[in-house]
Structures are given as structure tokens and as C-alpha cells.
Length: 136
Image 1: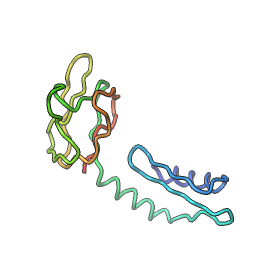
Image 2: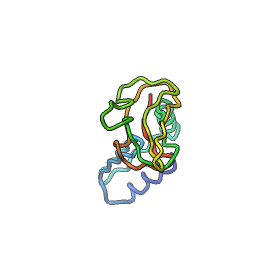
Image 3: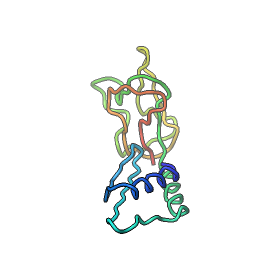
Image 4: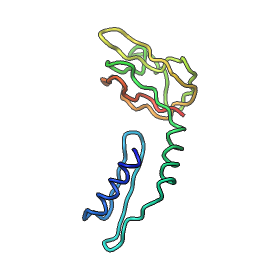
């Protein structure tokens, strides 16, 4: 989430009657704000927030779908999945299949690392750019 959007959210929170709010975004970012009726919401310096966001983003990499289709973790229904959470992968390893127009397209990793999260359920339709895996 960009700093300007966070700042706008903080301003909306201070102008509202809400006393607290917790938000969790799809990319794993968590925002929690709380205020007392007569107190202002504490605002942290922009540099501090920006540095934290950059640090989080540098460690996270995503494998995304290069096409529209159906996501599969296994080469066939009776096979083991290509990867699971905790699997070590190398650049070029096949991590899943996206079926598009009855063609099975093997999706390869662009990174070396470890699968930290599988973001899509097996057999789910995906679009171009859908985040499939979070890698560290």
C-alpha cells in the first residue's frame, strides 16, 4: 500500500467516529489503527513507514500467472504437487500448471528461494498477473 493511501486512510480514521480499525490486504500487509475519543491518532514519520514497507517488499517475491486459465498444483489428479509450502525451489523449476484452452502450460519459477505461501487454491481460475506463490 502506498504511503499516500495510508495517509488518506489515517485522515479518514481521524474524521470518523470509529475508535479502531484492523485491515489485512491480499499482499499480507496489515494495518491497525486505534484512537481515543479525545486524542489524536499518532502519526509516524514518513521515512519510518517508507523504510518498513521497502524492507517488507524486498524480502517478498511472487510467482504470477502469465496467462488466463485454471491453476493446478499437480501434473495429474493422482500425482503429488509440484511444490508445497516450505519447498526449496530454483529458478526454472516447474511450480504448477495453468490450463488454457485445453493446453497444460507448465509455470516455472523466476527465483531461487522457498515457497512461503500458496496464494491460489488448486483448480481455481486465474487471470493474467494473479499472484500464485509468495517466495522468500
